[in-house]
Length: 414
Image (spheres, rainbow, N blue to C red):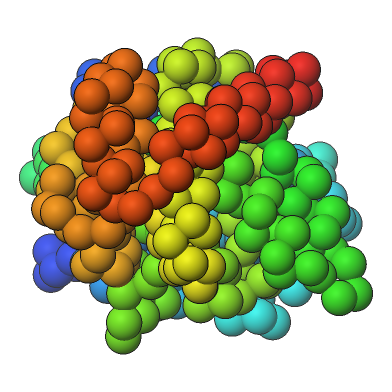
């Protein structure tokens, strides 16, 4: 499935790049579609941080992210490092004591706050009090007149708040804004939003809340959490992408989901699973090929069993991952080499997925021969690999039942 995000640069007076604003896009059409604000922001966050990678997207610059009232109440901005984001409070947020308290906490934690399309409301005293926590005020030059902008400009200068002129479309507007004391500039005169596309596996399984429950316990069971994540192909893929980001990139390639969990830490994992779970509540369900998902899990179990038969219990998680990701190129619709270049998987797993002969590839090939009913190759390979063919076929049926059980449970959860 192809997913999108747009970024629009924000410049200084000297037209030097200051930051980017991240914007929701549902396709390559460069306009904001009609969509729930909560869903738009969570989609932007997931596609930017997990699917594309914030390092690649932002090039060490901070990103402005729009936050609705609900997302502020959920303290979603605190899930990110203060230097990574600017908390842009949408004009639809109604200022009240709760929002003031949230902004005060964000400021104390070191976050920068931008007020989007801010207008002073004489009927709401909180609109004046919010100023003490603002670092930047964004002013829409397309929707305001000079007369409407003047009080905001005077307030910004008086309060030592940076002013950002947005929707600047001409050189005349840029010069006028600069002369009026604006510090930052954004608009088509400089650059239209740049759309970036990537691929994602839709979140089909809804084990998020069960995982969150286990993560919230005083002594979380790592083995159980690992098992639940391994049964969620989309989540496994996203966590591996996150492990490969600059903030977490390991010195050595990883062999298992458990290793990825240890590298990320339970707090980081809980944060992202919470965001994913909230996103699922906000959006319509997306269809996905049940057969491919089920087959991926069947292969994972079969490869794991192969490791057990060969007395390689310690390597079983690597065999499991080989089977689980064996159809990921089909699911994402992009070459396996490109996918693997973005994942921190051990070379043995990568080689097996690319078709290079090794013990993990032997296990995967044996699974594929069974799937297509190539019984001659099944028999020959079992003999060559010293695997009990009858026992292997019996376990294949058990693996199918295990995968189907997961599918039925999760479909019922929907």
